[in-house]
Amino acid sequence: MARGRRGGTLERWEVAIIKAMLGRGGYNDQEVLSYFTRPTRSINHRVISEIRKEEKHRALRPATEEALNEFLAAWPDIDPGTGLHRSGDELLLKAREAMIAAVHIFNSAGLTFRAELFIVTSIIAWTYFMHAWFRKEGIDYRYMNTDGVPETTREGGEKYWELSKCLNQQRCPLSPGVKRNLSFLLEIRHEIEHRSTSRIDDAISAKLQACCINFNDAIKNLFGGQYGLEKRLPIALQFVTFDATQRSGLKRARTLPANIAAMMQNFEENLADEDRADLAYAYRVVFVPKLANRPSGADEAIEFVRGDSEEGMAINRVLLKEVDRPRYTATQIVEQMHEDGFARFSVGAHTRLWQELDAKNPGKNFGLAGDYRNTWVWRQSWLERVRAHCQEQGDRYR
Image (tube, helix red, strand yellow):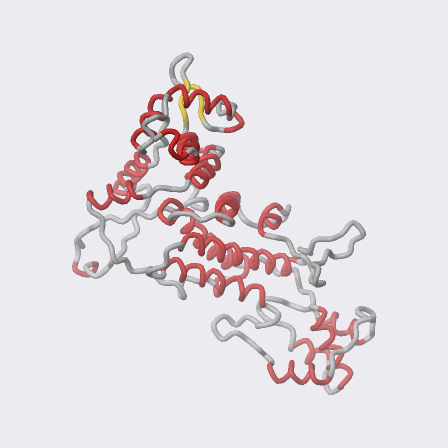
């Protein structure tokens, strides 16, 4: 159920059109009002009276005859799929279309950088979404100078809040889990923005899935169930099955750039266990091959299992085992570098590196005290940082 709409205000171009209609004559206030009221916005009839009497918007000029004729010819100018007004609800329409495009891109066969393309496009979708909600709630989302005048670009366009600014706004309606998910994707975008990456699709797919579900839930809860995307985006069919050999091969092949791996590790190490388990942060789907136990279910490709059921808890135990975060001793770090082809990287070289980078500083989150006295263990982020160091040094350690 969508919340009450408090942002029943007119755009400047709409006020200009109303003035032109009143100037032409032949319309009473209620008739004028009918052109500007729609399901996503309710305008009080008093507003038309105030414009007619010049109690408000006195300085704004009426639209030209040509502009008024174009408006009337295009009216109601409604998107047939959603019932949204193409001009008045432009932000919400753009938000939906951008998220649909993001999912289509990710599901497209043959694309190499699907995750990167999804992240960039979905951030655009969420930015439009937040701007649409701010407008509905009557919240000014423009950057302002100290004198209260809107900041502008060099070309004169007004500057609007980026997504991170929207998330930090006091009245942002999104849950903490949704904000964490978007903050994670923004961090990933910053890392990939100016440098090439290998495939990261598998490593962050749970975050991307959560992003889609969060968007669909938010648009239905805050604007109305009729704007949900589930009818436009059916479940994608898969060309693959996974046996043990394939699964092992995927694990070996899934290497991340050191900067991406370190960023992900540092981000998640700062989250509480309940935050990492929040479905709004990461939504993991488990595929389990299963024969139908009844004729009516023989053609069902997907079955949803409750997490608190016996079968669901058994699956969850496997998932917990899968995501248990490894810890490494210094010797294990060195052995891993040897396996990577850096045979001349020694324990001494490792010690000099962590001392140089102050890697045991708790604020850097590279490691922590071990279970035994005077021991130290390293996190995955430090392993990736050491790997990056060895790669940067070229033949020094080979």
